[in-house]
Length: 333
Image (cartoon, rainbow, N blue to C red):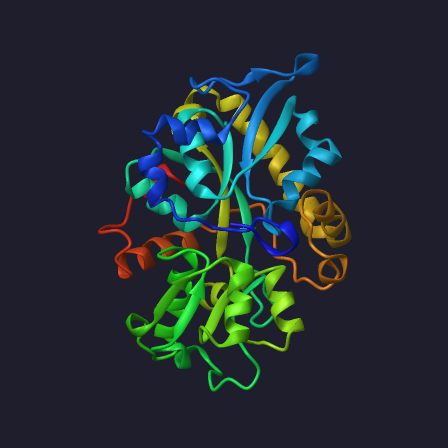
């Protein structure tokens, strides 16, 4: 879906992606420079060419910075960043070998694993700041709303960018922990910019948004009700970089190099907020005034395994999956 000022922002569910794996047309639409065998190509000057599927959002700033800083080149990798709408395109492209690596939210990867897709997380993607009211994602309401806390979301109509995924799961937990009944919530799927507009008009009672839409909402007088990622786990790993298990087994050396370069990129982004804001202007159309105010997430180098386990448990609680998958096959050893 299209985001604010042309930014495409989504965290699509993976249920459609499972079917797309067997659809040649869907995979062809993803596009890639590598063949379907999963083999990496030969880059310039003896480097290995890899394609990484990313979503053009704040979360992936580190990999753009890493390419610019030369961290991947230093590992002998020539990176092509292929933008996609979300996991519905990235997951099947990685499984088929069209992309060697991809970026997706953690719940989508858990759901994919439960459907039998053999994926392997290789690096942390993005994490909550851990600070309530100062995170990169939150549930917002219009000024003067009677909704003032998570429990008040019970029975309300809430806008989310994707049904049955990380945002509904984390909101449900926040409401449940506050003593409310999340089963009474009426979720409506809308694009992030449409969520802001719908809250303002009163078409929905509340909406979950991420940056830069969170800053946009607040600039229009809306207020935060709950930081749903923080409320779920102050150390929540929201997304991860991943590959296929087949590629990880056949190209362990390249995976190791990618992880090394990615960790350097995460460290750099986490310590250089100004550089993050500068690089964002090269692959998004976020307004400069908004860009200066957005809350940046955290980019640690370690995946929080406990938080992934919690998300898997919540997926079972919310009946997104019938049983918890073996996370040892998904998470790094």
